[in-house]
Image 1 (cartoon, rainbow, N blue to C red):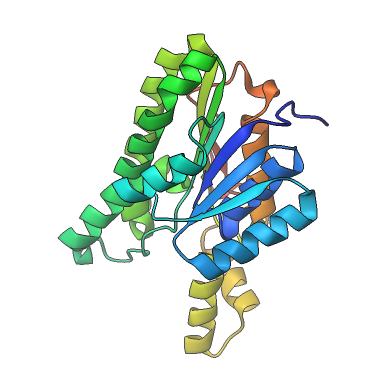
Image 2: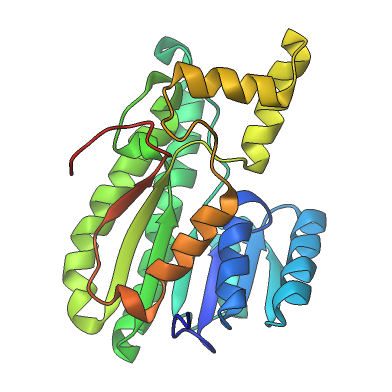
Length: 262
């Protein structure tokens, strides 16, 4: 299926691994020109080379911290008039005890998970509105809709982001600028693999065994974790011409670990 975004210019922040990389891959496969940002240069360049080789698309790496003013300026210098903005970032640490969350952790989570995407959206929205076409997708977390103590840092800040996106989406929709969020649950991301491999080493188990324990504990109906490619492809759909009448929404992608009619 042709999603109608060939030749569109896209920014994919946090795109060197995991869901961000999968999103950049899906957009590039659809023919978009993608500027990918991340803080780690070596992994970023390798990811962009892989995406370009797999898709034939123009893929530009920009080593920058998109949560900083300097980083945003550097990324926008490489793509000053983006049609598409996809934002994600490494999640803050899990918080098994809400009382142990420090003020420093709160401030970091707010800066990276809330203020950074808000500032970046505000940088590009006027141009999108003037050109009468734009797509913004924030890859957040299912904890934004369904709170959990272990995701208190991540869920609370992304819930605020979803609220902001919903409000702004209503203002810009008349200009064919569409803003939506994806709320993924547990996927085989780089962060998850690092964490679960660490638990496996500490417990004398395997990665697969730790995943199976988590699936059982959290009653994930699918019986498994998702793949980052699932999130990447849905990102591309939300950036497509088929999303013209879907805006201000937050789509849960968690394999059925949460239950809700609406």
